[in-house]
Amino acid sequence: MAAGHHDLAISTARPRGALLTATTLCDEEHVLVAAPHRAERLGSAQPGPKDAPVLDDLPVIEVHESLPFVSRYWASVFDSRPAAPGTVIVPDLRAVLACAIAGAGLAVLPRYLCALALKRGEVVPLHEPAVPPLRTYFLVVRTGTLAMPHIARAHEWLHRAAAHWG
Image (tube, rainbow, N blue to C red):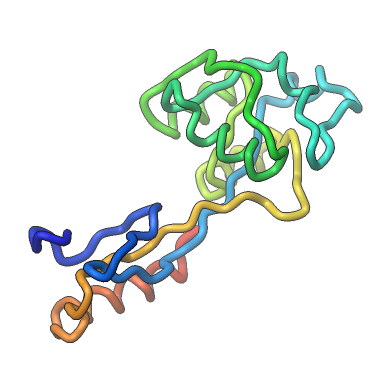
């Protein structure tokens, strides 16, 4: 972007420095879910606001070995790191959802992706924090380029469209 190869970018990291300008585009709420039979095995031992040990024995489904979604959820909600490594690593979030529905373990997913499965009871929330963790998306441009009409129009269109996402 800074080199001028692109006019707009959507990023989950706010760029630093004066070369790029970012505006908040949208927030994505994340939900900790599993198949109903996994949740039933937890019984009444639901995790508290800063207490995740009850979840330590559940297999973890993720998109990468570094556990980006689970780690972010644990840090935000439980103020810790997940104890379990990734048990099932799959290439994308739709596959994570499919594995969770099949009962392979717990997963952290964007609410928009699992909303229908939650509604159908195919997965259930394992924890519902008072303030759900969010992932913020930013619309990034090179500083000063919003004065260019075509970039300003695209920027405005994306902001209007993002109001209806999720």
